[in-house]
Amino acid sequence: MVFLSKNAKKYFKKAQDEVFDWWNPERRDMFIIYKHGLDRAIEELRKYKEVKYILDIGCGKGRVTKILSSYYNVVAIDISKRMVNYVQNLNLSNVKVLVGDSEALPLEAVSMDAIICLETLVHFSNLNKVFSEFYRVLKPGSICIVNIDNAYGYIRILKTIIDRIIYIFDRQYKKERQRRLEFFKPLIPRVVQKTAEHNSFVLIKKIYIGTMVPFKLKNITIISQKLFKYIFNINRILEKMPILNLGSTYIYYVFRKK
Image 1 (cartoon, rainbow, N blue to C red):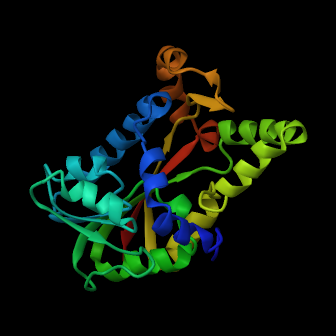
Image 2 (cartoon, one colour; image 1 turned 90 degrees about the vertical axis):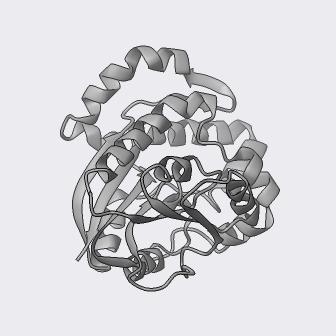
């Protein structure tokens, strides 16, 4: 199932310096929510004591890889040579870094105890191929943790509505947003789950992150990081509330290979 144009893959291979400059999940406005989601993912992963070898897909600048290396032997993969070189230069112990395409992973079948893939699924052009590859390299019974930017998130819907209003008055902004959608697209939760299940994964758990999050539009702050600190505990309550949590900005999935 294709979500993005093939330009996404070309972009991440050819515009490596540009991607390297903007790729920063720890950027100030989103750091709190990024760390919150990452902490929950690591907490969930640590429940599976049998995990020794883990694959970090779309490793970027290695933030997740660095944390994982404290607990596991890690294979970190990214399509960008610039990112891979950066992670290699961190000189992390227990880490092997590879340039690789997630639709054709450079790994042997049935070789990994777990996969973690964060902030990356939204860039893939063919989700079915990706989950097929995840299944191929995992051992039976292994865990796969992924997250998505939720197309039905409250903040996402609000931003889309405001974007469309801005489009009327600012054609350049519209052009920039349309270009971004060539390599980034929020995903529909039920489609992600069905695609994983089609590839013989079983859903173990869903973790909802960020019913509210800091965000900007055209460099105008709507919810500041400072404000978000005050409402963070309210956000955590909403993340646990049935139905209301369906509008969370991010959804983390824990799948198990049959």
